[in-house]
Image 1: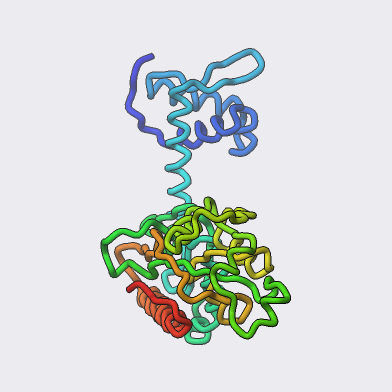
Image 2 (image 1 turned 180 degrees about the horizontal axis):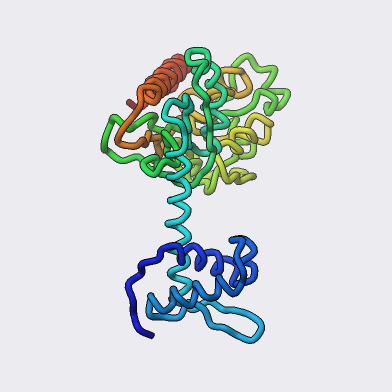
Length: 310
């Protein structure tokens, strides 16, 4: 095939659709074209590229290795383009704020406090995308991303909260003997209950090692995939858990959970704020509100006897 410059980028739209369906007929249906027109455009694209994108068989198509690699790239670029166009189409005067954060942070920290922000800014339309996938504000995918990531010394201005772990349990979990006691149960007694964890029991092992209790038998009963689920399991009296303080704080304040003073751990994780290079006044106001809420949470945790890492 004779190589030619890639002048007609619209051919890539037909190719991406045909690659997704692996069918000219189905691609034509989506694009409102005839199968012959799609096939002709793919041929033209192959001529310009200088290599085959599909292998044509009597009753079906199969994409080539190079075609598959190109399809992945084109699909990603078109997806970014659609997102950018959608963002540019929004009226610049539109008072909306698009926030991206993890499911657990949205459900257990942000949403329970958000009414205080909307009372201060009733004209702002809040849109929360609770998604664990990483999004890029610079591409117009959101106005601000609250990222949960490993903590490392760096730009302090982007740091929202350095995560810490506390031992917590539901009052309903306690046996009758513990309920009748005038004193809160200590660490050794709480360790007799099922020990809940997220991912691996690594944090429990660290705590047990610090208190010289690693050699004793313990019931690592249930494993949860997200911190929010772990907190809900503790609230439901499934066992005792080492919980991220920010995710558990609302339930502590409402009395749904109790914490054990002196049984905290530092975490390797934190929350950081990511925005585009240019920030609006409404976004600065929201960031200031976030930091004020974090400061209130820190003050509460300190009154509860939990030292807060600055």
